[in-house]
Length: 379
Ligand code: GLU
Image (cartoon, rainbow, N blue to C red; front, side, top):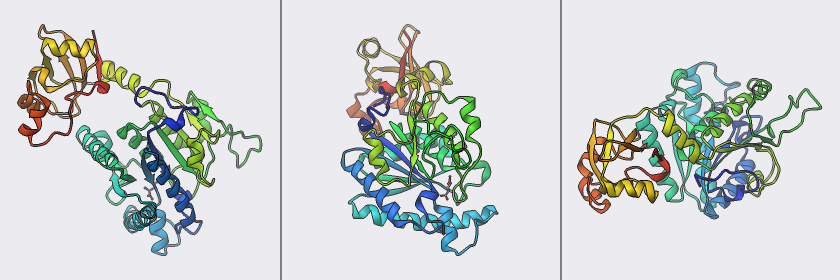
């Protein structure tokens, strides 16, 4: 659904959904897991998967649960202390999810990420491939930051931001952030009785950023400020984002039916428009792919993806995920896009039919050298 903007009216058509659940939603005030809430959320997620949707869950709670299991009176202040708590808590979290989701016939998988997985192209692509392989098998990936190894400088730092990064890695249609806050308010509802819930945001203005303030609750890392940061990442990737209360029963199902709950942040451009603009003007180019006239025609006139068969030659070295310009045989740049193979592999498979590629490389992660959605035509 890369070409469609998701809003409340068509939310039920969203296919790939990232749901972030915060520590305060998963745990009691004691820091111990709130099983009835987790059960309710898991049942709703399982229902979405049974409807044919793909769901990725971003779950906090490792540190909070670890702190409770270790019997500590408060969250550790030192990095090793937090890491130790996360190492204990992450196992408990996954054990709980595995058990509860299994009751609803679902398979879960653990994915722990650090900042490097988001900024390094190669790791980003590897990570994306793993997500895709899991989703293709109907598995629910459960993501958290790899707190055990991530110290401050390599940390994303909060799971609101992490969930937006995940949404952009997997090309989600919508990101739903569930927390103890029902959405974005015009003022702080805890101190201002006139504060009103904002149903829809189309522009994240400086006023909104200012009013979001700092972190709110004591168990998680995120307050409204990190949620606004997350919204900026999401909408700038063409992904709609919702903030709603994880306290409300059946909240996910209600949101998916388009009920007017929480706050929705709407992107201005679809994922496709955004990506194409970025490809055309924002990306750093690497190498060159030269295609024959048949292929040129297919790309320009028929809107095809770039396949190995049409490639005449490959220039310079580039990695998987690089943005590579496509030239015709007369030396004119006709398109550019993100490659699914590196230059050495392309050197081997140029001119070959897709069916021959797997035989030669021993693997074939992709049918297309550059998928249509990751390509912009320049002529
Ligand atoms: N990764 C942290 C944890 O699982 C949570 C970070 C956050 O709450 O934003 O405990």
